[in-house]
Length: 392
Image 1 (tube, helix red, strand yellow):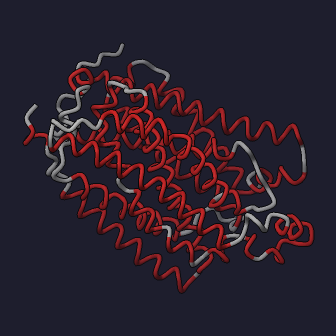
Image 2 (tube, one colour):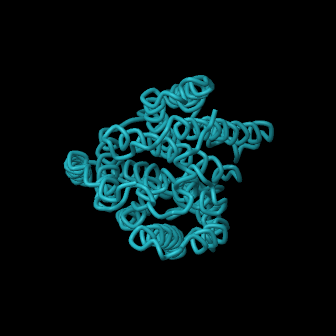
Image 3 (cartoon, one colour):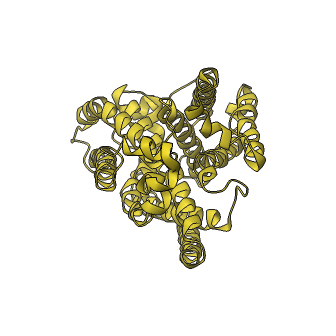
């Protein structure tokens, strides 16, 4: 494989577009700060949770590949690392949320929750307090950034010098740190999303958020792979690699539906007033419509489409399904966040502004970090086997 040909030097148009969209989104958020501060922070949290769930899902996929010493994912490892490379920026993008904690989270002002709600929140004061919240967030982000940075750095080091063998280190770190990533991801979901309704809880909530983020990360990886191949940067990738990605997409679409169904089913059969509030808020008015749309968009439609054999061997169609899943995941995160503040109007123009700002910034940052780098891990001993991978 020619090293010069695999150094990624494209993406100029994508970089310009993403920077322009990020600037447009930032301008919209600036206006929103003067027009509607509450809507601004909820929109920003939704966009942030959407982006960080995808980066976290990509990190877990990368770590699983290393821990299992898997073969075929080596071909798309650098693209996976590119998604993970957005984590340092996402750590910085968390800072604006610190200025909206009292706007976002009712546990910071328990007197607004009524007598029973205030009593419930005050009982959790040892955990739900602003200083500890900020410390925990710093720990979560530090863990993700440190692991993602080390794995990417060691992978690139072997590209620079084939005599450097970092495979054992990457496997050891991935296998050893997977529990830490799983735990921090779980507590991040508790802190950043579930505590929007501080009197409600669900032990399935982290699994639900992880499943959505993981399937969205796979969908984004399909899109990046398709675009890289269409641009001539990944000519060696085969239909077998697309088939493998398509199978994983199908598997985790089912896993997301499993987590969603059992979270709902367990709360429904328990029939406790303090547990049903979450679903009750999403079963009224326009939120009921969005709930039905979400079931169809994130499970029913992709499940029946991906169930077919041929679709997974047709990259353009598979990429279209991946784009659909990615959009559905945003609706999912929106569905998790917004009913807490918008009982009647599910969407606001600030949602688009926040999505453009966060998504555009992450895209530009990740694209910049890929430029001038090999688009595949050239000197990985598993690469020849990965390129010969066949799946029927």
